[in-house]
Image: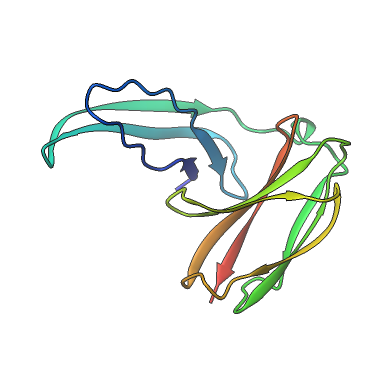
Length: 149
């Protein structure tokens, strides 16, 4: 798996039209490549039809990231809590989001500053891997994995 699509699932009621932006959060070490996306249409609990798409992602270069922005998570793996340290080269607000690997948003919090530390309580989470994403208003995004034991 090269990353996670968010949201991972979208439900649209019969006769409705819905436009939903889908974000792709690449795994750490992502070097570009193709990702397959399948859209399935269910009718009365059965698969009605589906379409498959290949989405090419370019190799992200270091020049696309601001050199002085940082995001780290310690300890990792963690049991009860972990500390997120962040520093963004921006004056805009920064939002921190926590996702599971299915792309479900578990936490969203606006950070009070563009540099600081935040302790995440992991007690309510099942053991597994999670993705923490910090994003500024310009769309610059940094991410790390959190492993909850």
